[in-house]
Length: 100
Image 1 (cartoon, one colour):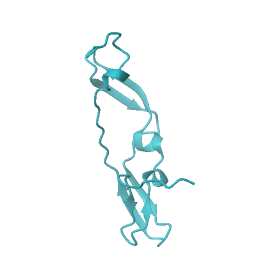
Image 2 (tube, rainbow, N blue to C red; image 1 turned 90 degrees about the horizontal axis):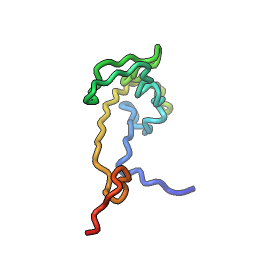
Image 3 (cartoon, rainbow, N blue to C red; image 1 turned 45 degrees about the horizontal axis):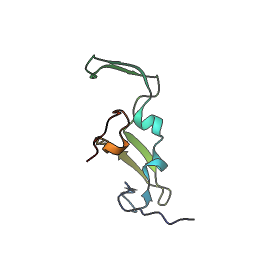
C-alpha cells in the first residue's frame, strides 16, 4: 500500500475527541452537490433557473455520531472552486499555436 500525503487534504475533526474523518466518509457526493434536474442558462451562460431532482437537493449540513466517542456533532460544509485557463500546449480548442 502506498503512503498518501495528507497535507492539504480537508479533514473533519470530531469536536469532542478530535477523531479525524475525510469528507467522503461523512458525505455522499450526490447529496453534497445535489442532482440538478432542470437547469436553464441565459445566452451569456448565466444560470437563470435551477431545480433539483426531488430528495437530491444539496445538503451542506450533516449530522454524525463519532465512531470513536459516540457523541453527536454537526458538520457544515463550505465549498469553493477555482477555475483557470489550461496551459496553451494542452488547449486543443485552437488549432494554431505560437512557435516561440
